[in-house]
Image (cartoon, rainbow, N blue to C red; front, side, top):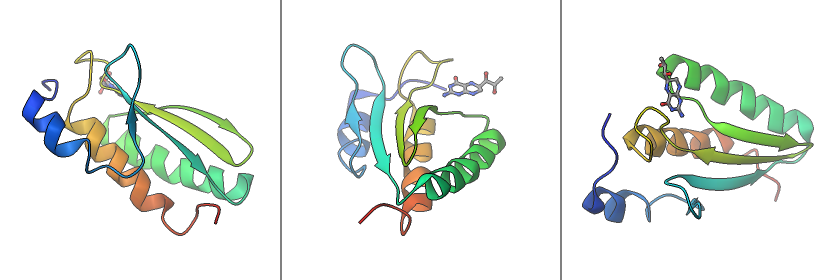
Length: 100
Ligand SMILES: C[C@H](O)[C@H](O)[C@H]1CNC2=NC(N)=NC(=O)C2=N1
């Protein structure tokens, strides 16, 4: 999988909801805040199954109801379409679960 081209970045990254570029690294990040630990972990479980199926895994750190996520494609050394797809899937699965 090739890293995103400049034109792909310009098109795909601004369309993502709440994701931002990580400084000093070709990666994107987002903080998800859920109602409680149960909601956070339910979401993580669902994402984990999808990630395993796709063979593309997040870097993430969970404390109680908060999950800090970083996405990058290690094999490509930077952002690829796989990261964009996983970000979109994470957002989809989080809808309705996030803290108001
Ligand atoms: C063999 C296996 O599919 C690869 O090592 C996958 C696993 N999960 C991965 N996840 C991420 N984020 N980047 C990768 O390059 C990657 N590679």
